[in-house]
Length: 316
Image (cartoon, rainbow, N blue to C red; front, side, top):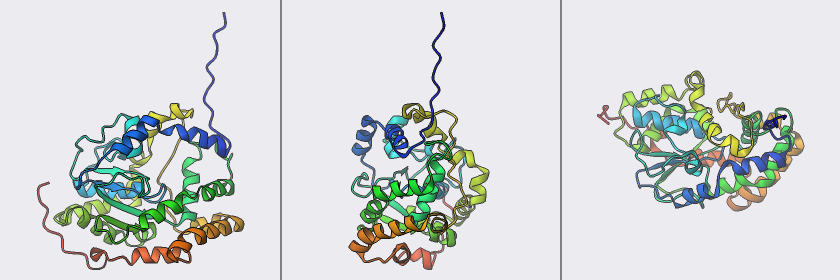
């Protein structure tokens, strides 16, 4: 008697196929668990749109709260992803390796659990598109099967970036939300680390701040790439998504600002500009992302312009 052969999972080759697979990344129980979570007032929730510096900010926050501890398998292990916690067997209510507790999310303001403190990073949506396409290729869809422009058209039509950005920008001026742009992180990382440290706890000492800055460099993170590659997420959820086990989803690219405008076609850039005008332009009056980024960078974060002198390191 011939035994039936097991059909190997295949990666999607169309946008619709990719979307269908990724819909299974979370479950209804997982989504309910995320919605029910109530953070503590001291909790930090890092909630940029996907591919906008989330992992980078997680590394900064974890380095500041631990003095540079790197004893984790993957960053999601020590900074849980709220939307996926239940489906990865993680208890959001549990104590963490250090104080303050920290969490990752891609929720817009309307959906994010309220009661904690929030760090948001905005990134040029053209660059987000290119980075997202690169991230998903070889994991959520077969390499070479979905052209960048096709991916971009689906991304733009979903309007998720603009809705996410608008929801958070409406909160500017709150003292429990700290805003950055990805581009400023690239230009002024030392000042950004100082601002994050002051947001977490002004008593974080100089040595800890210097360690966190050093360990937030692209060179350092690339040398520890396995700790930032989402392999725990893939191990927990690939089978549910019907994806092969051999996928790769590196988060540590070159991080080049402005690359999206060079790689997207002129028609896609025009569609993105039109979407901007109908959303961020219509509501807030920003002509384009550059104007918006300038407004974000101009928000009053005293430590960005005049870094406070850190206190000596304290036992933590």
